[in-house]
Length: 273
Image 1 (spheres, helix red, strand yellow):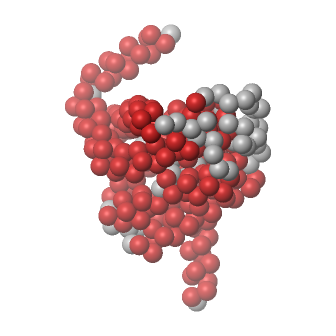
Image 2 (cartoon, helix red, strand yellow):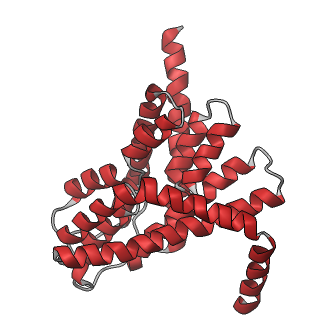
Image 3 (cartoon, helix red, strand yellow):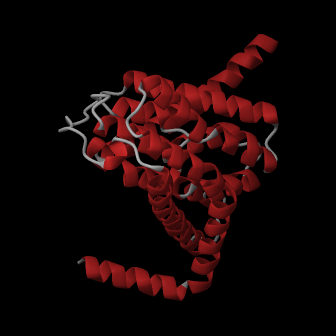
């Protein structure tokens, strides 16, 4: 069955080869120009630190670096035995880097005030989700990897570089899927949101081009992170969380952040009237 599915997917890619190539190239440009420069140093530092530190350091580094570096950090702490439960930490630190909100989104035309509001609602949504999330992390049987004990600088660089290739691959895969779907659906306006649900980098840009001041929607989509970031996180979480639970976690974060932004505007309007 899997072979037939792969054959059908290959036929679709050949039929839409121009769209697939363009989508993959755009994803590679976003990765090289925006993702890799911010993610690589954080991943190296995270691997060198291994399971050192605790919740406070993990939350600080997670909120500064964003996913999937935060997932790598949480998994290392769990594997080292320094924390018993990883799901709440994954929920609290499953965010996007402030550089994306204040740098990338502002460069795409979002006012800085709106970007700051999105970032605060993004963090608040993560905190609220972690507060209500029911942790079901399985028990860990001692340190499971050298990464849990910390790596040397050459080892950290080598492993981080390999991991970054997987991150780039995930971005390209979901960008291709989004590109083919948009081609099939004739670029209907709502496909911009669908693109963001698959791959948030190019999808966020498409949402801004398609809708007028879609900041609440974009805040929710950034908190969900798209299936691409979900898959990237799974590269590092291992057995700390089941894939379906991580997906539900990301969906909850997206919904809560959307509501936080929406009601923050309502409260502001009430105070100004």
